[in-house]
Image (cartoon, rainbow, N blue to C red):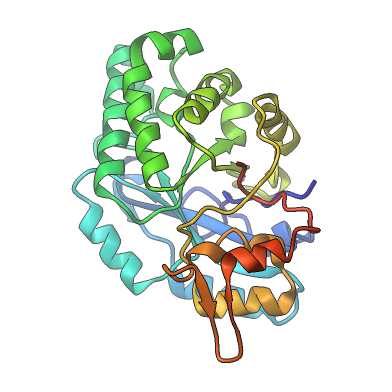
Length: 311
């Protein structure tokens, strides 16, 4: 089964020095770097960490000339309430194909800073989940909610504690994810370094019980050695809960130019990640083509779609 890593970092992130070329040694059919966008970032001396869009564009242009890989522009957006307008203004000027939504910090401290160890863990978790819920209500410019348990990583939580103390908050969060037709990420750092697979074992069936359908796998790699890290383990956990088949969601903005590139490249499985949202009418129209997304998908039913999302 083929998977596509939807969460990784390069030298365009403040906390990575990795170069694109090292990731490409894995010969990926598709590649998207999702570098950090975090304003007033406590993890970087309160700097505004904004990836250099011109460098990203230039780098992709250089690589496309000599690589069979199809490239996309991605970004991981950390949001603190009150920053939404500034972020949306930036995104309006710098279009990305894939946008991840993350809650890393609250403007005062990062949720994995040592300061959280001096606070009551339930207070920290409540603050974190309340911020996530608020951001999901005020920010509409993302497709994937990443590492839902990021704010718990330095704390010791069990699934039973989440169920007992925070199921109400998590239910509200997941309902908003579903309403926005976003995907829920399974994050390799969560599974590996932070040993939080048990928290995903709790949240996956909760998400599904509320009507959640879309999942994605992300290594969160900051060095190329971690590309697609723990993908078999994360996919295996999804299978335990009856998640076996990856399909696109309905609202995945993709430019007409990228869509044409995918069609010309024959990249049918990745195209389906976005196809049904290219136009609100679900009709894909071009100078020489006009057909329904449903018909197009049906025509590809012999292909093994196992790229990003599961239904």
